[in-house]
Image (cartoon, rainbow, N blue to C red; front, side, top):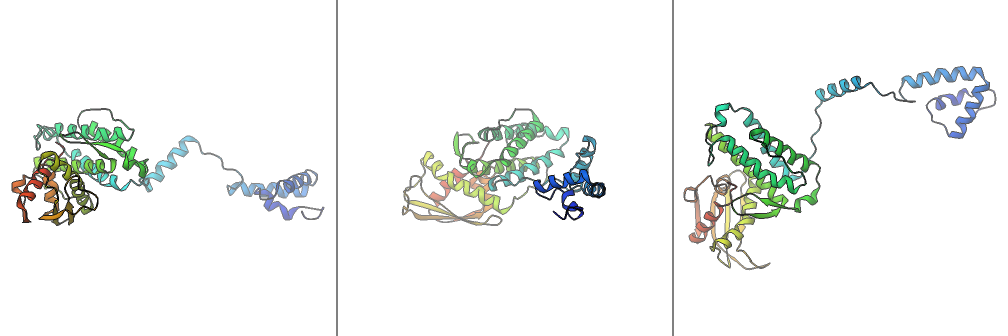
Length: 320
């Protein structure tokens, strides 16, 4: 501290609590004895409080709410990043919600795909979403119509927003006529797939053009089908040990996939006996049960019987 006369040199730091405790105590003792320094200290403390350094005074509740509302209007809250397999579902759920928002009362009663009404279709979709939400520890409460589906989708997305990568390996029930369990990552692919499919069902019922999802979602759907097909072929008795089929798909989501026989040992030597060429989007719609295998535009090289059995099996992978 400066000489015993005055402590003016230290008062700036003292006013913003930037001196050690021992020195602060010494300055406080001096101020009790020195009116000149005490006056200067009072002035500096006042300036510091105006700068908001010394102590922040909490706003009144009404002021705080008003400031928060203005801030959110100027800049909406940043969305919590979702796990990669959940992003496609979030996109498709948002598209479905926007589509349902446009429906009139009469349109809710229109038949759609295999369902007696759009309302029945939406309630079916909510029923298939529910087991996945339950597997995430966020069970949904059934409710009719759009409100029930929307509440369930919101619950599912909120659960995913707080989840980490480990949840992707958690078992979850797949939708479909045959009970099956798969890792959560596959269940999320299926949720996005079914939501897209049923949104297109509604568009067809309303005479609107169908939509093609992003290429990465198409690839994820094809990949899910490729993982499921060996077991489906085996269960149907149409698998061919030692013989694989290649899918060479074009258009959005293009790529090549190999469907190997079920129970093929690691490093097995199955030969590629057939190559099926088609549009990736058409194969997804085949998997959804929206294109009949006989009507799928494709070309086949090699074992046609293997190819036809594979396409017939793929057509059973839908969620209806």
